Image 1 (cartoon, one colour):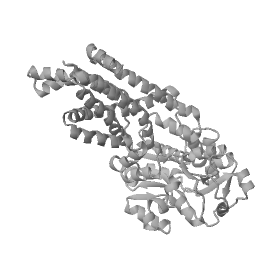
Image 2 (cartoon, helix red, strand yellow):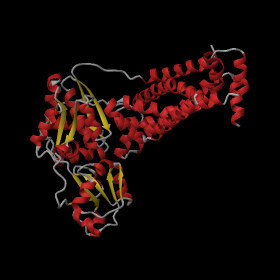
Image 3 (cartoon, helix red, strand yellow):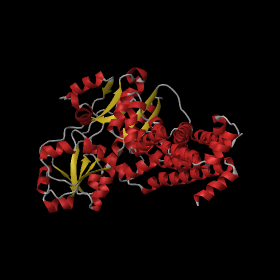
Image 4 (cartoon, helix red, strand yellow):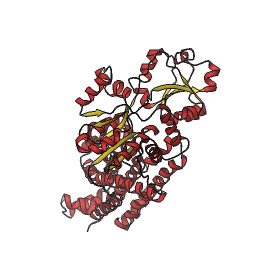
Length: 509
């Protein structure tokens, strides 16, 4: 077998091993219920309650926690990727269905029915938006109402990224109150509280049931122009759940009217301040309030890390295998057709410049949530280094070697497999090595669309301000990047003839 074929076969075997290691065990059972939750503590707790209630009826339940944002869950529900998730009436009317100008909940229910969706009765609390700042600073500046901010254009405002773009968010609030502030930045909602403590941000958006309001000593500014509407918490679910899992749905709907605003603040505080796992917080509430006994099974550190390692390896292995299969032939074309090659490299370069998060979100309408959009994004990011290095390796073959191959009468395909690819294999492997390391790091963002992996503890750690959880994802990701890099390098030592390796090493000096 020629060196070129050996390299290709070796890479396929390596990627296949990564995929095999990463393949997660599947669960089945009927009826099944898919629950989603947003990337903030209250939504995760409510998602856990819904999941545990459905599970108490014998349903097979999967809870996709901490998905990227409102748009991600809404699209997932409409595309039949989710069955149910907690939402807020204000978000439905003013953000997701704002074009319909819905006046009340009845109009909202009719609009949802047209989409094949249903909305539960309110869960019992209103979690509206608000603006807050440190109590001492608000007192010093004499600020009690949002309209008071007009007298302080020098204030630094930091809002959650979603609030910066929402129809009822910063643009509308600024116009309603004619606010003059220019230093306004978007950031993660959970990081805003750290910004307030550090003084880098002086005003931020709050959810009225945030436990951090009391924990950080914040003053909630009066919405004296009544800009923010009511955000009653509800369950949003697919219509077919009524026939597909009626018992599970009936159990979930028992949450309606059971959660007061004060109760929700306390539940949030248990998770955020006391560091009680959201699943346990939900279980305790269901036991006390609904007399539903649920069992929370904790997962040990080793088990968690191994499960996430499998998920992460699966993302990296599948995307890298596909990229190798697609990018190496593209590199060959780029080397043999220079003009076409410039176009191919230009397109791959453009794909590389698209921000990872934007690319993931763009993929959702096409591929839904879960591993598919993450795999597609990782595949696209892997193309440029492999295509470029393949083309560079092939065009760097000395002219006398090519002439010797022609003199021997080799066909183009025989020359490719027996001369060109073996000679270019060190450069191709270097490109694959670069792509693999990029993939391991970028795959952490896959957690935002429900792909799991090492990004999940990082997101949870940021949300809960828990450095230990952040490191639980960050350290294995760094180690995996080193291992994958070393693995590709070791594969090169086995698969690439020693003479070619020595030549490549001497040229790199």
